[in-house]
Image (cartoon, one colour):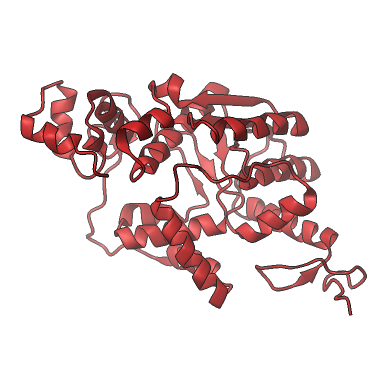
Length: 343
């Protein structure tokens, strides 16, 4: 016997919501999902009327659903936002070039202007070239650092007031777990924030409208809406640390479906004991980007790549920053240590 929608009671249910367990028809699921995102935006006051907002678009399910929802809700509830798409081309042959084709189709489908910035034009390196030098173990460190700064640079070019990203509840919970396991108190304090205020010159505020949306429901929404998105995983991410946190979280979710939200709420409610020394935010002496050290992570990573010392940005080498800034040569012992490629 068919199960009826628990919301309208008229139509046949086509899915059981992973987040609530309710059996819903397509129309009721669409409305519930869209309303929850709307409530997240309104309750957190993510946007102000008249703002220019850049949507970080990768072509994947999260950013495609985000672009669709932002356009839909902006029109439905008159947010008064000027929306545009912002993409980063990391230079990954067979992956990013294909996903960018999806973004270009989204540009036409949603009638939103698109800006693409590339690692090659910003840093003189592509991820393909970086992986050849550093291997497949810590390449995600390079990509994550460069992408964050690339988004800010693209946002400045577009003159947007805010960037919204497709980070979902699963992403946030994974990040909480990773920071707990690494003992990274500074990142743990801010990783659950739904929005970031301006952190200095060259940094555009960011927000996560999908923070409380389950990944499974995003997939269901994209599937039933027949949205055009790219579903292939990055070819360089099999060994990423996040993958292990994701597997652990999925195992927890299979036993206790509320685990994702439980982890997020735990992260939100954690506080740092008084007297604990936290990194002081400043600016990079070379490029002016935010940094708690003399050189920002991006500049250190680039210096290592350009000098043929790929380990320079991996681990704690802060004592070498003064040498790098003053362009002093490194000792033979230091170079030998930093040239090692057994990542």
